[in-house]
Length: 342
Image (cartoon, rainbow, N blue to C red):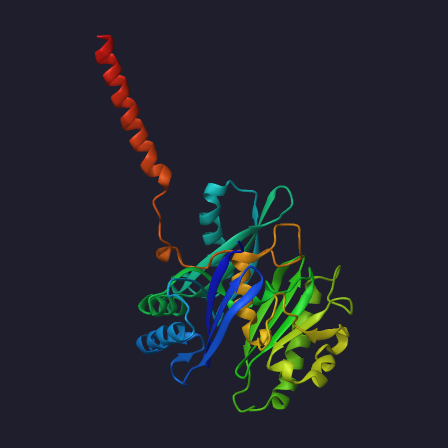
């Protein structure tokens, strides 16, 4: 039977709940939030939001329990770092030391998550993410208060990257207050930018010039350091969020690159009435557990658990219990046999 997962993503203006079994959507719901409950990914009223989550799960008849939770990605930093070839045992300390050099905020204010990537002989390539502790802590406390157990966390931009079945692409997600631009190459998020959009721009048409300018800037920046394999007309651009409402603007977003622009396609079986565009982060969260076997597709290689180590339940392994019991029984038998021989 296909595996079942429940995912939860809390935006500033809504809570998105998605339950999937395999690649099939079973249940979905979106609960609008009043202004002031969440701001730039930070939960400000944990008790009230926890009550809303309980009501949502009860209304949708979803059991309170284990969930894969999404972090907004606000004020997060992503880097690909290169280290000498290192034994696995010393990698955590080496990553932390390099993070002090490349992360532009004090490490005491962020959590670090990382994943080794395929690398040339003699070096270690690592994808590194740093995200605010206060945002992650508030999310965990709120979910725990609601009776939920977040056993896996991920950052929203990385989740969206995981929905694209292309080795190279540009993903543009525009919302009322922010813009995400992600560049994928060799199945790895090479560049992730989150930008605040002008608060005075109320309509999508008013935001389009800024969005187009930032896309051009991102492509130019990437190409300046990847001249041997730049983003060009062969690399697809996928749009999601508010941009889905304005298909007439899509081709203008490509600018000088002239790359083909289309809606970010849903990689799951979508039942009638399901708007995948609003649940792309949830789908990417579900794919942390439901992705095809290695080599079967071109989805993102980056798939670490961003749940802070302080919250990871260190389950006692069955072997830790059985081995001592087995040794005790064995010693007892040896003693007993000794008495018989005697």
